[in-house]
Image 1: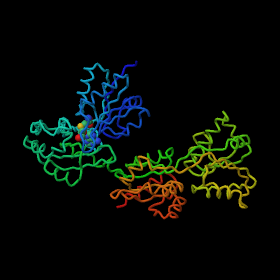
Image 2: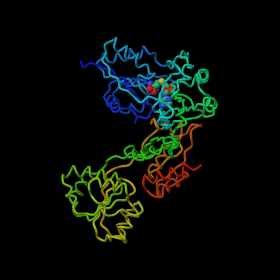
Image 3: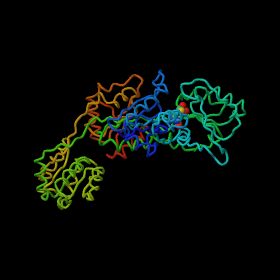
Length: 510
Ligand code: SAH
């Protein structure tokens, strides 16, 4: 039997991007993951599908699993020969009881490894723009805890000793006892004018912060509505924080935005929005699957050289086309000398990946404009054209090209199917119902239709945010209007980058 091992891993302050590469590797390999309240559950998405995931943190209003039971659990699983990841918020050895867990493992002769993490003080300072040390203001950094452990309400530390220590004080778990801690610090000589910053949920899109002085902060805190978990930073350096709030100041910070694209396609839009500070909920209202008629594909491929033009109406079509093409041929020259048209920039980008130039992209990114430009500028009479598409929205393009205006000879090659999903059991839908959102972004008519169909499963809680609806372009807007959904804003260009710009312009309005 392989020997089991326990990996005590720092899960960082919250943002999954802030864990170490080592942490991620170990999470990916783990058989068992034991995690607590401050370890972001999103880290579990990296785990194997069959990994055992055990939550041992505090449930609201309830106590956490006692420490000795957690230790027993680690020992038990490791003895079964399993690779056990113990994930702890921040760093495991900073106010995380990591030391106790390691002692127990040593007693039981269980092999272990310790992976440090970004502790909350460092993360909160960075994400608030506070330099923890500063040549002119602070040459020491002290980490203090308000409770020795979160379950213990008593306070045995004598804070007056730290009143004159100078430098920067970082107080973990300090909110509950803050009035008393500040009083003791002042009694020990700390100035009432000393700057204080409190940062809640640092590094996450729900980060909030409040600033004041030792004398004002309790009032400031109450007005701010900030609660746990929060890092309290006291010292001159708080006043030296960056003027630009690089994190909380991003244009979509604090906004919750629903992305409605299919799961396979959502990533890029989600990334663009998160980079601007938004909290993104992905609700895939449609799914896109490869779907084709094998006979038709072989016929088209066998006669591929006859086409003068090949038209791609979506990036998806390009992907599926080349997937199949490379299965049939191992030489790109088998494609022949045809010219290539793409409906828009995203489709063209997908084509460029194959080192193929795109001969035509219409000025307006839609199928009608593409047909128009082909007919007007290129002339398509008696020209053989292949249109690679999905199962939707292709009729008008083909009709135009074949009409008296165009007189082209068109073959259509549908390669994928867009279908509506059922989100009623989707965890993201539950979150949407509870919390709502500031905006829902529609990227196609089919996502709008599916949204309306699933309306019953998306009824918002009474205190949830009510979203506005944004549309990527005229066709999507038309569908929204037909279905009686008010359109708050429409992107003037059918590109994701531009859609994000318009979203910022709309949501940033006072
Ligand atoms: N081992 C952890 C600390 C655990 S004690 C670490 O190294 O960060 C829990 C305390 O950490 C909280 O009460 C709070 O003071 C602080 N904390 C943890 N995550 C935080 C976050 N994202 N933002 C602000 N404070 C946080």
